Image (cartoon, rainbow, N blue to C red):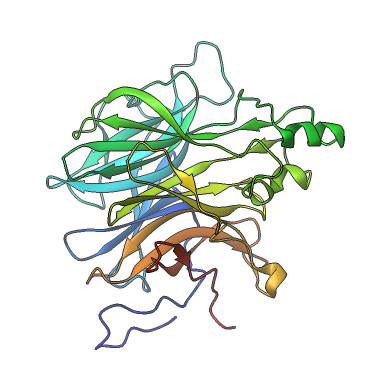
Length: 351
């Protein structure tokens, strides 16, 4: 394990992959000066665990911090993608799970909820006996941003489930005998009350996979379909931050369980769009064609050095050694003088 030099307040992260078996990792730099990492899986039972670190290099397992599927809980299964925010002295966890209210017995009945704790290590208790809202379709991957005028916005992904979409990509897949239809997930935004108790207004569609074959985003966002992997295309895992007067929304495309999972980004001058995808996409993807060992890079978050000068991309991926288990990577990222977002990864520690 890389050791931190005593005179180095923020190390160069160079031990990828981390010995943390999370999908959808999210790192909070809390006011106590510690980093806290939450994610999907990692040994948690019907809920989520957390790791703590003073330096982004050395991580300590702090155990399970939230458990659903208990009496009074609205959430019963498939606990995914936790994100934790420090607000007014408390810690709020945004997460996805299966809603127990399912009269039509949908196979995918995910919603987004909120849990709260006094400490980043929990215990987190659900804020309500119901999800934050019900858009009428399965929703996952909640992400929040606060604006300078005191408003709060939620970004999330509508699942592919029962959302077949006609496109040139779908037509080609059917013509080639791959799939009869293609389902898609789309990213939406909606305002929420700052206390995270309810939404304001209606969701607005912000990002979706491209419709046309000649769209510059079409090749990389359609790889799960064009390779015959699965009859779905994704826009999911939104992570949004603001730099200057621009909102940057990072998002993941392709099958989360496959090698083609990758990250792109879009920009807007307003929190609810319109968002324009970058011609530089994808900014993070597998590197096996370039002699590397990493595949399935996606569902990222970001965190900062303690002095606020260096930004880091936190994401999950796979290597031959880790197999199908998703593990965490942390690489430097930033926005250059031309406003272009970049990620210096995926990297792995030398053998």
